[in-house]
Image 1 (cartoon, rainbow, N blue to C red):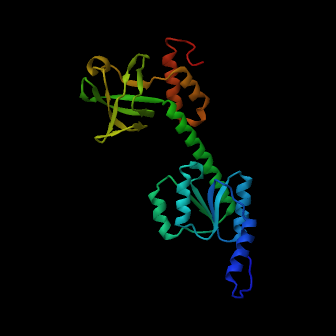
Image 2 (image 1 turned 180 degrees about the vertical axis):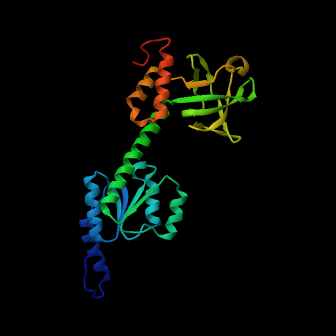
Length: 270
């Protein structure tokens, strides 16, 4: 930090320091929140972040505080990649820790005493977060899903049929159209219920109850064990093009759906 002799000129010194620091510290109109223990550390941190093409919206000297958390939270509405605070050689104020906990996994806080380790961590986190965001967008257009029918849990036979399923892979959503192992259309999911509460979706490993209008369970579902999401060819190609965003189980299910569809059309999805 710069030093000056104080001669009852606090206002003048504040302006002088503010000008000097602002000349050294250049930030962007968007980006992450960065904190460090000294002006020299801030300069080094900003240089390394710039080399990694990681923009910085706000930078400061000292511990991570409530204001930093509020700034990171505001970034959630703009870009989830920027909802992160990094701290080089600083700690987190006690009154900020609870606020961070309240945000759950929405805000990421990374601290380290080794600047290169901190840069490595933030770069890795952004890479993983970007994949998560891209996958979320991909799944909003369509969803890969494989379900196991739990025949021991049939709550209503018809109007609508209500029965239990286990999500073997992917994600089940309301209004999703399903096919069976032979490619025959089964019906559409109207509602999903978990622990007696309606939920918009169910993920891998969950056992839930589903309702399916226009289906008589005894006649239609009695001999069916597995159900799949009914994908169109363009949706299949889109998933295949973004296969790096899919888990092993999701990729396996995608191939199974393709094999089912190709029973009727040999070049389906090609």
